[in-house]
Image (cartoon, each protein chain N blue to C red):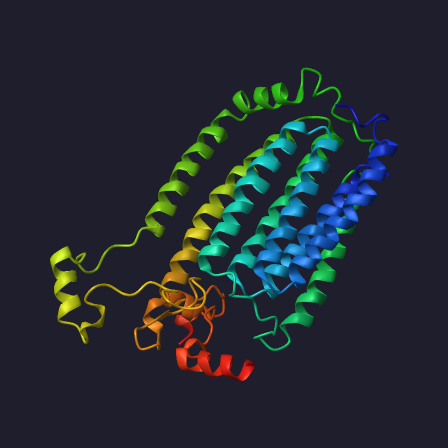
Length: 262
Length: 99
């Protein structure tokens, strides 16, 4: 794919692509800092990564562009989303600053640093014309990278493989949690059920929605006397605040409501 | 438009990532900002590879991607471990050494 027609001067389609996608990437990256929910940050980050992949392909780095989509947008961002779901989507960031005056200092430092970087990188070419990759990519981009990787850079390549294995081991060690107490046996569980506070749970907890008006998981079951049984609803639903007030399912309450409607 | 425009956008993205690391409190968002900085550096590598006309920059960017993947795996495992013991993913809450 040769998008760079003139050496040093990018071709018109590339300029159009750059001036559409470039500002979008910068806006998405800024949005990453400003949005409150971490999930929205992750989506914006994935967008920036896809834009960068397009930039790579436009700059004759076809292999890196594909790897960017597969590894970054595919694997790394999905890992981020997975951990976000695990840690809790609701742990939204409070955007209030905890260290007094941190934000103005950070923004001032960022403007200075960004100005310095732009000024420096603008001079990085030293006025030379860009060579372009048509020569280096003559045998194909993948072949060229493979040749460099397995000849000049073969030792770093092997070191990186060791790093990958170490990282996998490290993640396994960090994520492993030792059991501090022995797993209760079937016998112990049975004894606990009958010797517990009440015999109500001896036959197991009631399922949600039994004899109630709806049989959804967040609706408590009705006991024979018409009162709702809050134990029938999963405790994590209650902790998350997804459960309706179980008193509104009391049969007496429902009956008076129906009477009023009549 | 010449190729150094990509360098400017890479500098901008790197700066935005640096601000995010300082300003945001959620450890996962801080981590994503670090990823943004690594990606910006990669864009510079690819652009320099094109300016200089050889593939060394692209190989460097490839190595950066591998290192970033390792970093994500270990870092997210640490975040999950901290969350398990402290029930929080905020970088401000892990301040036990201060007291």
